[in-house]
Amino acid sequence: MRQNSHSRLIIRLGALALAASLWGCALPGADQQQAAAPPPTPIPFDEAVLKAANDLFSRAPLPDASAGKAAKHVLVIDPLIDGLSGEQSLATRSIEARLVELVQSQYPQFTVEPFSAQTVAKSPIVLIGTFTGVNQEGKTEGVREAYRICLALADLKSGKIVAKGVARAKPEGVNITPTPYFADSPAWAIDQTTEGYIKSCQGTKPGDPINPAYADRILTAALVSEAIDAYNDRQYRKALELYQGALRSPEGQQLRVYNGLYLTSWKLGQRANATEAFGKIVDYGLANRRLAVKFLFKPGSTDFLADQDISGQYPIWLKQIAGRTVQNQGCLEVVGHTSRTGPEPINERLSLLRAESVKTKLERNAAGLRGRTIANGLGSKENLVGTGTDDVKDALDRRVVFKVIQCPAPS
Picture 1 (cartoon, rainbow, N blue to C red):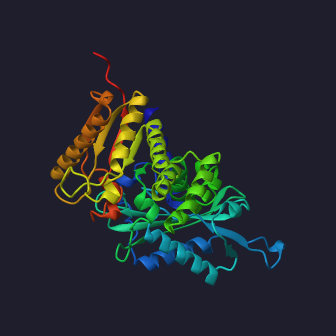
Picture 2 (cartoon, one colour):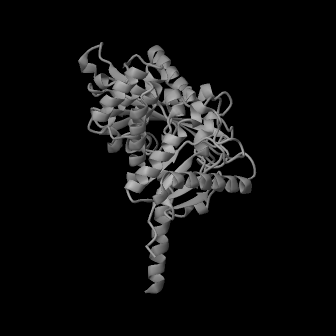
Picture 3 (tube, rainbow, N blue to C red):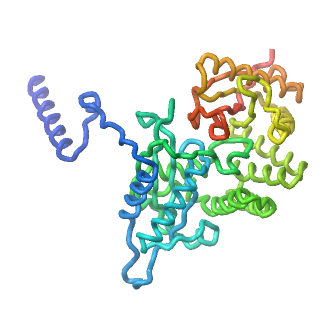
């Protein structure tokens, strides 16, 4: 009996292997038996953008022929973002400009309209995309040696992803300097809208549903996008009004909105409003148990930058973080981070010293935090950008993160 069962098992495994070869699939564990496919070879930036875009649009559905010759798909572009940080950069903006040029010259089935609440109400096709630094293995860690482009078309009428295009670009000629709003934003965290955007692009295939965290918030996303554009154009009063409108929308409780309210109030000299807005940023972080703040230090030092246009805001930030944490009866782990420049043991030590310095400043602002904060340093282990340029491009890599932790039991 055992021999017959063993024979039948061999036959079944053989049949499965044959089926797998016919369908181009692999059996579990097959990756141990054959070498994994090498990652795509990076190509020059311009070529990579064209490849991803042409793959995307050539696979897109055509308009309904019964609607007549004039029928076209309304296409809007929700600004492309970095696939880890969610930030927009000069590189992502340049990709968008090239996409618009390509559509207008080669894909007449689309008519491009602005990404706004009015156009979103028409249930158009929305182009989303991520531009992410990766290493040789295609992972978002270590030295970033290429950029992965992911483009997707999301049809709001059907609620599905209808086409995708991907490519990998060489880093030469790529400028990932954040746009002004993202460069100036004091705090960072991936909110549900941004996470839904990234998952809709990177974690789907044609025919899959749009991630609900993105689809349900797209009207607010359009308002926020308009506000970011106004801020980038230095139209601070208009931006403030748009952020206030976004805040009143059903899904307006977003970090991008709170950052915008803080930035525009600060630019307009409304210090009390800016302070209150930063308090909302801290409340958001405490509620979500984590908040990264972009304190910028002198190179190799625990002292803040001497530039008062930058560090002059820090006393307000520290006071709000300390005060709101005490009000919430919370406890914090203060975690320092550095860029990858220099030996890692030194980076780890420097990040710890910076965290300890911020911890001390918090406790000076609120004596009630003493005994309720700890400091830690991770060096460059969790870089988000990974360029090692030590400038505005990788400011997020030198962040200080405030994690809500369980308070120690009273002695």
